[in-house]
Structures are given as structure tokens and as C-alpha cells.
Image (cartoon, rainbow, N blue to C red; front, side, top):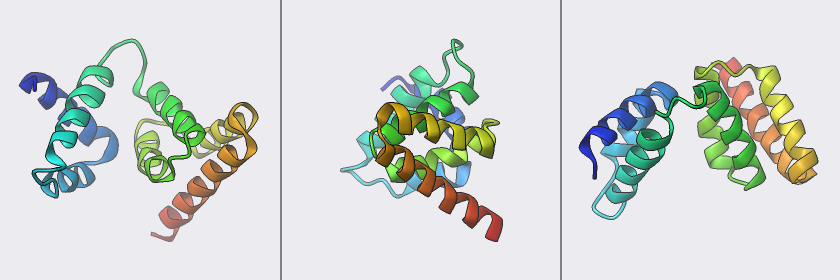
Length: 126
């Protein structure tokens, strides 16, 4: 593991997803899951999210679209928080899932919209 890339990735991961979530994920890792946490932090967050070619907002938009197309509701929920933290608006999130519905299928767009609707309802409820 590249320690520098891990540390850079950890910083970005905390900024995007929230330190509480990230620290809990790492603290809850055991011998079986720790290598995956290290891989995600180093490769995903360190090698990709730190690249200058796309803004964090753009990366969040792409993530939400791909996660909806791949039917990954747990990850959509997680990345909704990151998208908001990266400046994606509620209106833009709806547009993302409408676009997904056309290009990846209505069920994918509908499920993404459903997850986002629940996310925003929980946010508004406090």
C-alpha cells in the first residue's frame, strides 16, 4: 500500500463522505475487511478522487448515475451525502436519475429517485 496515496485518499474520503462515516468504517474493519478498506481508500479516493481532471461535483454526478445504473442503492445513499457535500443540488440529483431512466432503464432511474427521495425526507426530518 502506498502510504502517501492512502493518506491523501483518506483526507478526500473524509471530506466527501464525512469523517464520522469514514472513521466508523475503518474502525469497524477486521482482518477480513481491512484490506478492502485500504484498497478503497488508496485506489478509489487516493488515485482517482485526487486527480485534477474532474471536479468533485462532476465525480459525484458520475458516481450517482453509475451507481443507479448498476442498481447499488446502498452506495447511492452513501454518495448522495457526498454529492451534497460536493455542491450537487437536489434538483440536479433528480435530473441525474431522470437521465439514468432513459439510458439505463426506467427501473434504475426509479430506484435511484426512490433512494434519493428517502434520503431527502430523512434529512428534512432531522
